Image (tube, rainbow, N blue to C red):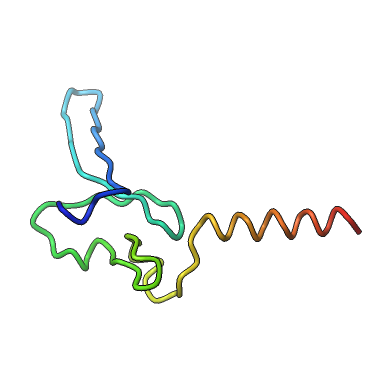
Length: 86
């Protein structure tokens, strides 16, 4: 897929009986979850592209605003630093 440039991955799952499943994946830029790309499925069923940061996001994060994981982590770290100063 041409859309999966930066956040693309590939998953290989092997069961104990030797059955192998392979799938393309992408990482949600907002929550960090890994989403399997199912072949021949409508792209909207797998997630979307954020209009603010132009990154791939999962269905869970669609419509929640642009809050990338890196910004959330920075906020949590600042909050923890402020609490430790008290």
